[in-house]
Image 1 (spheres, rainbow, N blue to C red):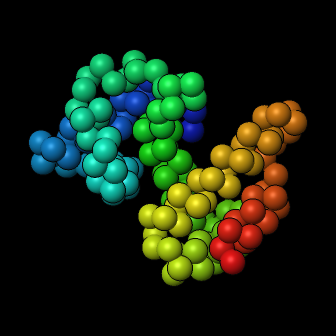
Image 2: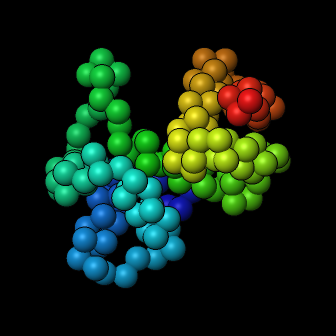
Image 3: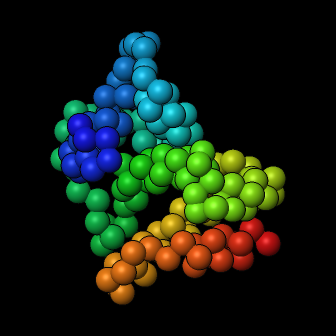
Length: 142
């Protein structure tokens, strides 16, 4: 699996495989340990992650289903942003959010902002606007 540009199937196989290794008490690599932290906070995804056919499941807006693989991937993306404080200042905003709402809910608030920024950038055909992202996070942290 390419570290920086995995396919949809590879991402899904990573989460299903990580959960399987966790349930079999097998060793996890550092990325697997980070993933399992977030998987365990979402027991509503356990049945899906136990299903080998889950990697082929469809999640559409019309169906009203949250895509658990996207959701977990966003948790990992936010963890990466926080670990390197990029965009600069995001860690301080997160700390403020986490103090008010707890770590998990703070991640979900950040996901809303990240999702909005990605949607806006795709519609405009431009890279994501980091300043706008920080602005949205700041507003949501107040």
